[in-house]
Length: 112
Image (cartoon, rainbow, N blue to C red; front, side, top):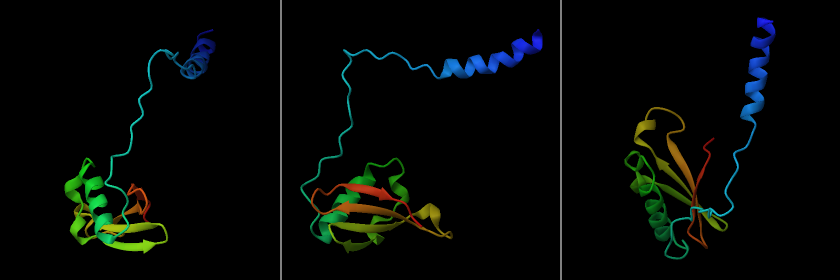
């Protein structure tokens, strides 16, 4: 009998964890909006400024060397590789970002 109860306990716990909490429909949902930009990033200088603003909002902004960023123009966006001080001596040693030319929105990219 003890073995049956002990083996049923994980099953009951698994089913209990699947239950969703009820949400109050009166509670407004607040979504975070992207940081406002001064328009697009049509030039390399505007893309660097947008990238700098984005990185300054990151928790470990002091690890990025934005002045040494390499920007490449690709169709309707800029792609930036920014060296990181804590990644010295390893590959890849840069973080990648994508900057939209029209909106100036900065998004991180995976590094291969």
